[in-house]
Image (cartoon, rainbow, N blue to C red; front, side, top):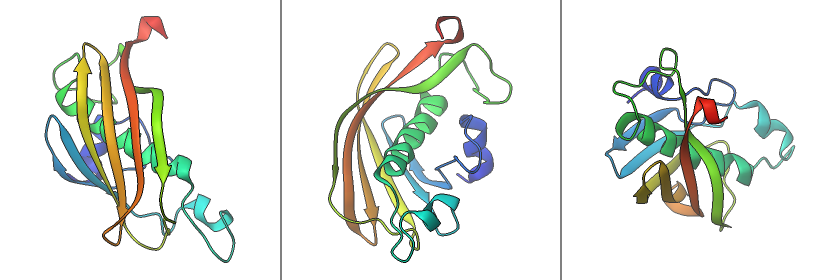
Length: 152
């Protein structure tokens, strides 16, 4: 899945769109990628030795899970971020655990693998692992919810 379809499923846009492509997707699993090499954040974090901020790694996981929710678990059929109204899908409600086990560099592609662990009505529990160059860089568990717009 390329960025055009990702943009159909997510409201996020550059420079805050954190899913460049989807390698694999099912109702319970998504593998996405992000290239941060030309992203505006990385030049200032940290000059001379740039690393991708942990908050951005969390956002990559959240947005990847959001793609899965919009594609397979939306409360409406054929969800389209520009046309479908009435819901905020995949709103972050809790970060349960986050461990950052290595430095993620912006000059290499980042792989994000997210698994749906539990779904109860409009609440979704996920675990995610962030990889770079075949090595784990972060492990995160979090919860997203779908919220009708009239409750926002």
